[in-house]
Length: 391
Ligand SMILES: Cc1cc2nc3c(=O)[nH]c(=O)nc-3n(C[C@H](O)[C@H](O)[C@H](O)COP(=O)(O)OP(=O)(O)OC[C@H]3O[C@@H](n4cnc5c(N)ncnc54)[C@H](O)[C@@H]3O)c2cc1C
Image 1 (cartoon, rainbow, N blue to C red):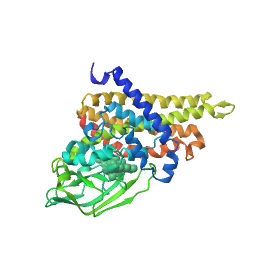
Image 2 (tube, protein in one colour):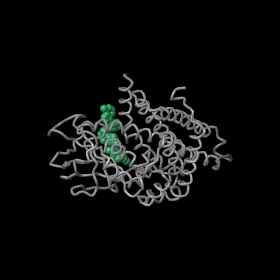
Image 3 (tube, rainbow, N blue to C red):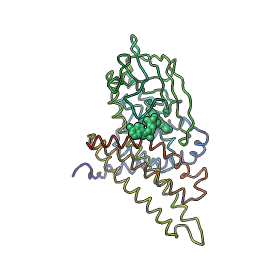
Image 4 (cartoon, rainbow, N blue to C red):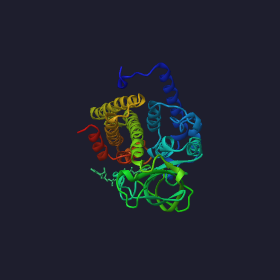
């Protein structure tokens, strides 16, 4: 049996069922009742990080000696999908789990001392980690980034800007992509990754207002002669581009699972509404057009689910080859298009209620675009897939 058709055994199924139960309880008790108010307030309480850590959710997939617990991709995607479906907003999940894009480079390429200092407090929910790649001059063309880090004795001195950074205001640690090497060095070969403690002199942060993801903080960062110990370099100087690209695969897979969860949340809300709402003497469900809309949603959800399961099984079997990368890119587009379609149909089925703040579908409708742009836009996903497939 090959990896794509691998069936999980009874023990793994039991673990997944227990995880799903924990996630459902956590969502129903501690997120869903508050999420609307948090979104309106533009933030969620920091105590939620501690609670998620207590349940072991922040540490999933990290080594035990750093405070984590081993987890397959299937388990991690279950987390993303289930929390999205059960009431977590995209903003909440992006911020609560921003360490899952900020920490992997530290875990894979940071020194043992750096890992020990940084990773355990983040997994305990006491500190927050973020990733800063995008700049005002552009995010898609990573190889063109301009922020510089110049070696000076035992330090690097960073100058430049980063923008649209999730958890940028709150983060205690920021994994930053910088241009190192000779002054004026260009292209992907001059990029390095460095871990920045956010309490350094010369770092200023400005909060940005957005179409959706309101309870997530998104920041513009400015570095003015910021000094970081050279020991905080992740991997080799000039080796940053590869680190960034590898990191993106995990982010895109997780975003696909989130997008699917949001599509399901829209379906669930629309179905519930269609069963209760009456027009012309019948429930909406009794109108064929409405039933067909729900079937169209279900069809897309089923295909996205099957594709996620297949790509996830390949990831768990250790596949990270060119075809797998292409699948992740195409999957991200398919899953986010599924979310877009379902959000649109759900708002339509809910009628004016779907336009009102407080319904899930209204919020998710506003969260669609960031899913199709962030972590690699739809256009860039197609281009990358084409290259990986040799088209
Ligand atoms: C809410 C939010 C949170 C984010 N969080 C983070 C974060 O935590 N860390 C981080 O580093 N970044 C973050 N981002 C930034 C995100 O990754 C970028 O927005 C994304 O990579 C696209 O970059 P850009 O917005 O600069 O668009 P650009 O690169 O300027 O592109 C603009 C448009 O042109 C298209 N385009 C560009 N080049 C081509 C081409 N060659 N062919 C065809 N079309 C092209 C793009 O697809 C896009 O539609 C976040 C963004 C948002 C909105």
